[in-house]
Image (cartoon, rainbow, N blue to C red; front, side, top):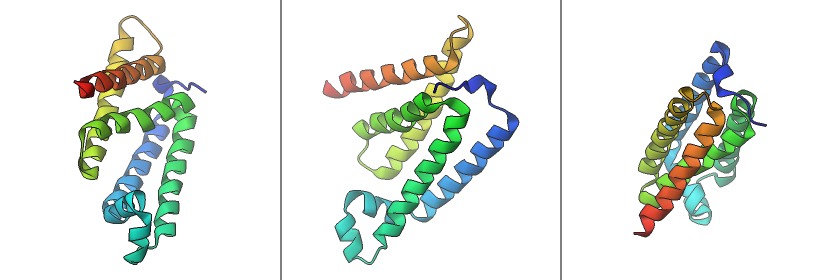
Length: 146
């Protein structure tokens, strides 16, 4: 349920790296198709894009990510790190490419920040990352309203 990010092995890091390469390569290769399927499936279908294929490819990549990461860091952190950085980035970006880049950067920054925050007082690393990410989302809600 919670996992432990501090117990990640070298094999886990290799698996994560390979998964990152697979997802980044697929996203770069099919970026326009994914955007078309996500935002206007009917228009994409009319333009000749195989919407079912790209929809299921996106679902398969997401499922593969969740399955791999659940065994490493736990379901709670997977859900938080898949949703909140993207939600924060989505509040401030108009273009999908910049949203993806900002969300990935935020995810890395918040993970590093949570690890650093938990180090000195010897707090649970996963919980610190989750709380910091949730706090960042709440701050983004307040910042965007002003």
